[in-house]
Image (cartoon, rainbow, N blue to C red; front, side):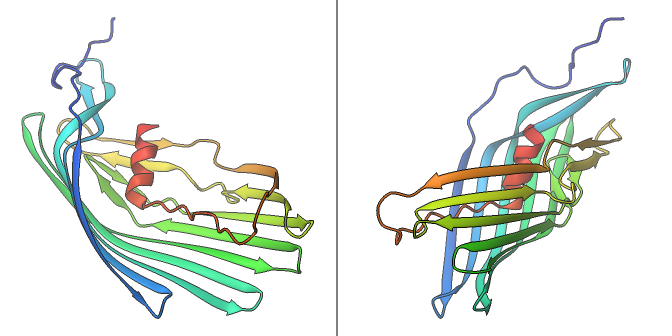
Length: 235
């Protein structure tokens, strides 16, 4: 029997999504930063599934939904525990909501989510240092899917030579092999669970040489739970 193509979803025509956002932030004593933000995305792109009831086959496609709104409150705080131990903490509470007409029904889905990640740097001696980072996010509603939490922990070790001009780094990501995407949907005629697991437990080794001044600080990369889950869903 040939697989039937989905018929409920419109043809594969994608519209660009547009986001309007605003943010207020305040820094207390030059270290702890509080920020409040709001964004609204029209024609937001997200993954949608459709089930063929005759073949019991589920199709996944990228589709536009009507809009997505995100309210977010974020706190970033560096904490010097000891001379040899520095901690950077980032906590976020955000609410994400989706609205769309989908399969002849009105989708209105939203959920408040808590996310926290901590980065710890340990100075063992003048040339050796270690890192430990951990990330956790509570369950998330993303479109028609309910995504379960997926915490993970990373560790690293660095050795420097020649006045920090040469650096050797060894990192082990997701040491407990817990990073995965697990979720479910009960929307329309669908009722199924899914899990996506990739090779997240990875060992990285790098050797770098720095030219010029050592006073230039590298840019710190951050990501939100919503962006992370969006990328996982697309994968």
